[in-house]
Length: 215
Image (cartoon, rainbow, N blue to C red; front, side):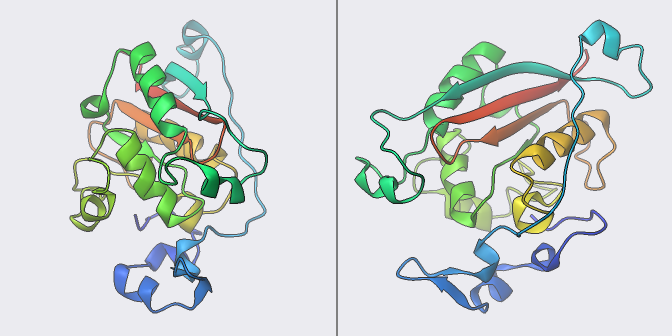
């Protein structure tokens, strides 16, 4: 989704119209310039401590409710090309990670207030929305087009801009933005957000976590 964060890059102003008008970067997939994440130099820092210690700090804590990691059956070596050898090229490790993470957290898709979805490419967002149970398989496109991932939608995502608009910091910026949402300090704050899903599940192995408010 477009972001209000200062310092974001040109991708932040993308829409369906201007994305479709950018130059093609891949055939025959028809991926265009704004479908790719930004090349970025940057860094993030995350401090992890006990909930008890965090309660004594200046900022309110974002509690790690659960974490999970998983792969797909029979993964081949390499990164992108082996996808073509999968039984289903639209199946990601997200399915297995979601099953484990939701079980550990005692939560489900309907309990997630906001999400930071690993967005190295636009297509990985659509597939993960499906695999994490926010819409049915094959319905990721219509789900996004209907506005469900915007601030007024049922699942606001990538409120800091994500890899597509803020910068590619290998998922760390997603964790930082997730913490901001739980603390209520995001520049694109979701009102009353108490649960945030953060994913890194396009490639095997994938991982994810759920952050919650300290209640």
